[in-house]
Image 1: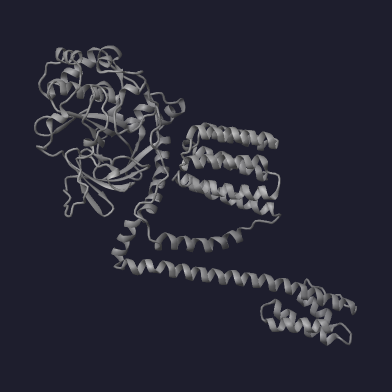
Image 2: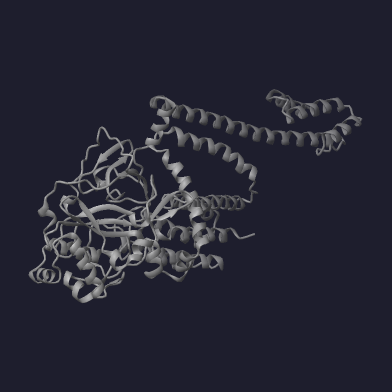
Length: 624
């Protein structure tokens, strides 16, 4: 059997493995070092522990300052528990580790939502309970755990179904991109980016009403209309083209594509398959304008919503000048006019495509710092989607064609077992829209320079060609391993889909279906809780009375045996039948008194007696 502290160390290692995205390298390294010391029963001196604690907490102070968010709290709590494990000397330390680890693995469920973590949480909790019992020199029994579950499960059901849900519970999942990683950003700032690394963090899941081929999976986030001549920052007017009030009437078009979206973190914009025209958030539907975007900050931050998409609107009304200013200098404008002579979108598209091929442009995630349009077109000639889209958008504007950039995602992995698309940060993408006089047309120069990026999607393309590890590349190329991962992911999806559907709107829909008034339904919650607490209090009272009665019975039996022993009779307390036989064959003047007390003890022991009989037995024993 493993030592208790070793089991705790294993739990910490598994916890770090599951939540490594939210822990700093220093925290992870400190946990690994602490686990090694625990495994070899090395307990550093108090002075050393205090110095290490100051160093670790000092690093947090310099890293985060006074900002305390859930991730910072998670790192602090993890560090404190490891320090306490290295200090484990007394029973009090053992209690603190038990409660600390329980709190830690419980808080981890706010960050990671998967069946894998549910299984880890459950197994870890039972291991900790077992350790707790061992620390008290008690034996942990499955029967006792079962009794606890009989009370916990009904209480959980009451809270889950009958307690009113809030409109938008806070999500502590934060799968937003970090510095230097691939991922969605609302703006395109090329002058500051030198290279990107792959990022397999999930962005969102989407269930579509129609099957869409990979090349059509363009997930729109936001549009960018202003450029400084190379970069495309997000401006206020890029957010203004939206109706902040919900529409009163909306009839879905049978030819449109309905998407049910579940995002994994807080985002600045709602995402929708090109081209979205309505977003459904809870029981409200919002119509979007010509930009086809809806900022999240205009509404409460939502993680679950629906999107209605169809072909872009014809003859949109907008400020042409807003989408025509390029802010390029004379040298850059002269170079564009010298190399591109077309006057239509199709002509310029063909000229740029030929130019990129002729000049051997390359798609790469490590282009180095590209500071300007000409630096890209004449010198570097390498870049990723943002570089090529910025160049195309600028050329179109110089040639008098309104254009804008769109930031979002392109691609997604289809799960054939559950029927959803999983879009990861590796699918983050930027493309161009040009106005042809009638509608906005999508142009994606990445498809010219790196067609595999569009055909296979971001996850497969980045993993195979953009610096993935050997293990990641092997994983992508093994079909059965991909199938197994998708099979497991479907249960994640189905389980959490069921849990999350019972939100504020889910409860309202359920009540409406059952034709029950919301006020009646939610009034049941305090009544059920009161009934449950009453039953539980009664159960605890009965258990305590049994324990008290049991201890009284043992004392009475022992007193009875002592009284009989003084009269020369050894009463065997292991068997009622043997004790009865010994009393029947005993020849003594007090035999009848002993038999009377014995009979009453049997009645009390087997639940047929009362507290009055107990009092009578005590009196009779005093008289013996």
